[in-house]
Each structure stands twice: as structure tokens, then as C-alpha cells.
Length: 396
Image (cartoon, rainbow, N blue to C red; front, side):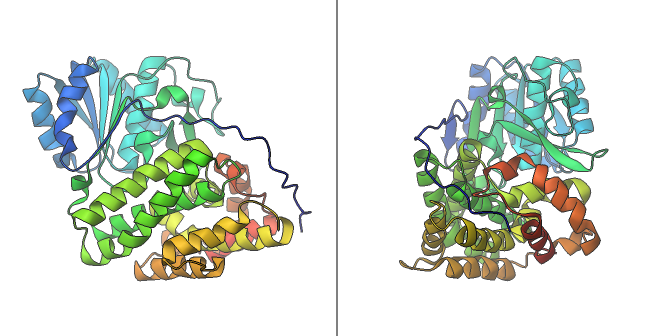
């Protein structure tokens, strides 16, 4: 077992950065063409998800505003190769602005393309962990992010996650220069979303609110945002998935996702996302579903580790606070919060990692990669290999 940790609090110091402008509200998609023109955009690369038809109203509105547009579809989670292809397409079409309309994959792809369009070079020049990790020195081409799912919060983060097929891992391009110039969060875009998408993306958002609240880099700004997001997610996610997302639920889920993005970008994450990167890079598994499968075991192991090695750690009472937020009961104990998360995952039919091909034989490699993942650095305390192994095995 690892020795007890030093929990003496450091002097308060933090940084908060986000998109230049955030626009939230039903029907706000209609404001995008004028905003693109205000950014100086004459020709836009519109990055979409697999269903390009969802971008048809936006493309028509851009045309009416006098903005030319070409589309670039992202069929799955973005890869290094796809970022190269999209950047070449944008350059060949002389695009001067990038607009991403879709889930986290489309937005991350658009964010990477906008950065590479302005900085040149190859994604591996800048990619963390598996690339050369060079700094992006120039601001990205003007980038507008419009999420159509409520999970990743990528519209307000400074990184783009790309999969490397060769290294079998996901890693980030990361720079303050990558923050979007405009994030438009329109809850109406969640109408008609499939239940399984609402479930996996919603649990991704919930994990991106819980992990920053107990993070070693938490701060007063993100703490408040995380608490509000957890409250909104807890009251609406189950109902939205099982009964369909009415307008109040759409508002809650979109707000929770946005708040989670603000939190993770400024306070870090933890073991859920530390594992999600190698799992997603090794198996054909959606990021949100992976995070959902990992969340209960990570909470349980972190709680036990804190009690054993950091009984005075400031993150420890926050597990009770999370329990109160998700159950709606003042005085709820940490174990009740973890049980609530497990029950939510059961109710929403969240599969284990075996669904995507992971087995016990893969656990040692996943543990080794998770230990080195950048997200793991903000876990409330370092976890031992035995604890990481327990998380991976329990999440199968």
C-alpha cells in the first residue's frame, strides 16, 4: 500500500480560461451565420458528424448570409489521419473559418483542424504522449463550436482528443490557442437524440462534473460550476433517457455538459478519464460509454484510498457532498452517492467494457497506459497499481 499523503493545503492559486464568447439558449443556432460573418469568415469548413443532413439548416442559413461553405464529415471518433485530411481539405478550399456542428468527435476534429490550419505541420508535431508535444505558437483559425449532444463540453475546452491507431491510445492536442472563438449551446438540438446517446453522453458529463470537484486542482470557480451541473444532471438525466428529453430536461442536460467542460478545462479530471484514453484507443468504444462504465468503480476506489491514506484530504468530505447533490438528501453518506450512480448506470443499461472487447488479459496494459495518462495527474491522490487493476477489472 502507498504511504499516507501530505494534505497540507497550498496557497490558493488558479487560472480560468474558456471560449471567447458563449451563447446558450433554445433557438440560438439561428445566430451563428451573423456571428461567423463577424469573425471575418467568407468561406467555412463545416465539420459534421456522420449525419451530414443535420447541418442542412445551418448550411442554408450560411448561404443566405453570404458565407460559402464546404462540409467535412467525421464518421467516428477523430484520429490523427482524419485531422490531416480535414486540414488539407480546409486549405485546398481556402476556408478561413471552421464551424463544427455535432458531438464531441466533430467538435474535437474541428478544433484540431482550426489549430493545424493556422500553425501548419503534422498533428504528431503537437500531440501529447505519443507525439512530439511541441507548443502551438499561433492562435487557431476562427473556430465556432455547436454541440448537438450533451456530454463532452468540448465547446469550451482547450484540447482536441485524437486517436492514434499505431499507438492504440488517445491523446490530446492542447493549447490555450485552441479555445473556440464562439460556443453556441442550443438545447433544442438535443430533441430526438437516441436514448443510448443521451445516456452515454450524459454520464460522460456527470463524470466531468464529479471528477473536477474532487480533483487535486479544484478551485472556487469550478467548484461552484460543478455543484450546479451535478444538481441539474441528477434531476434530469434518468428522466430524459427513459421518457424522452422535454424542454426543461434539454436545458438541464445542455447546461450540465457546458458546465462540465468549463470544469474539466480548468480543474482537470481523474482516473475515469485516465482509463478512458487507453480504452478508447485500444477498442472501438464510444468515449461517453467508456466513462459511464468506469465511473462507479473509480468513485469507490478513490473513496477507500482517501480514507486509508488521506483522512484529512479536502476531497474526502466532497464525496458526501456529491451524495447529497445526486440523491437530493441532505446528510447523505458517500456510499449512498456511489450506490445512486451504480443504480443510474443499471437503469440506463450502461454496458461494461467487455461489450467492446476488453477482457482480463487486457487489464495490465490498460493499467500501464492509464498510469501515464495526463488526466490521471489530477486524481485526488495517486492510486496504486493494485487499485488501478481493481478499477479496470470491476468495469469489465
